[in-house]
Length: 415
Image (cartoon, rainbow, N blue to C red; front, side):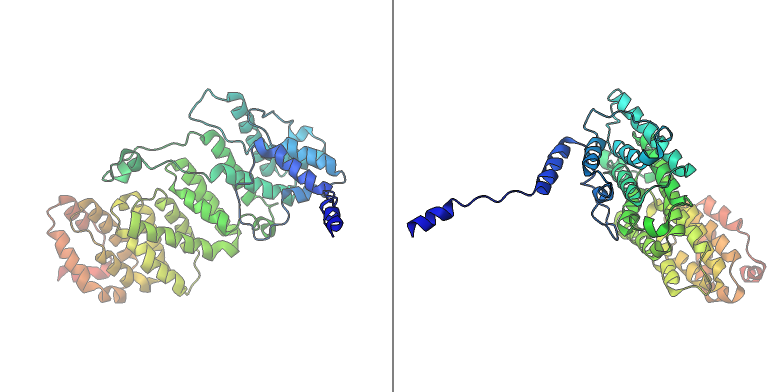
């Protein structure tokens, strides 16, 4: 019995699988490199990853060497040859390597630090933009996924604290805050341009692209609208609008997500840098609504757009809001009563500048109002008119008298 126990203790250790060793070794190789593994884009149908695509190559050793060489270690970024100078058979692999170079992040607060490496990344990004825009290379699906991962690494970042958070002065008006400009804009602009060119390209297959530009990606884009840099918000506005136009499957989700941003702004924070840009997108969306209008869209008007008249910093986005409201009224004149009563509900009491804005919007709504709809809201409207005529603020009285009323309203005003 004792001999059996001793023999069991001397069992041979099973040989390790060579593939396990390769994976472990490759993991150790990249441990000091810049990697995108910590940035996850929730793709609809994600396979084995980028490595699987290159695993289809005949020589697996060459594939492993290329993958390890593609990810730059800190301080070792080298300029790669131009894609047009590379043989056609190798362009996909070099495109991948250039994407990995563009994943490297720099500190732009120190303008003298890593100047050469920053310029290499800028030139690489510019080349990628030109490649996508000119359609000189049909990008493989694997490289499309890697490109969206690289874009995510660069644009989805922790935004700096807002101006009022830095100073601690909550009472500062948003329009009076100093304008913040992103220090990394020379690189960030090219990344946004690359994303825009990819979305609008005729060669981009929406069935493939929607695997990477999914709901998670769209939500992160919407979160980026809180950036205080107006240049970044302008790009985000254009890109989101293009996504809405090209990816029909995302349209209900985008509208709902924008709704949620508005709700949080109205009822919780009253601070958001991108409300104006989001309303600009909605203006063109509303313009394309089919008739008869869906109940969902009417609820959006009542629950989101009209309550946007409540927050104090309305002056920052009132022009875009007014355009959206008028679009609804012009689409369906029966909504005039709802809109006018909504304006009266949120009519300012002590803020004269805000009251002037309301009067300008009321004028535009009345121009699209039919006589039957006007009679429904006539009594509360003229009560507010009387208060405006007796206002101690001269701008309120002057703006009301300057309103161009429709002809059918004149008899009511003379009563």
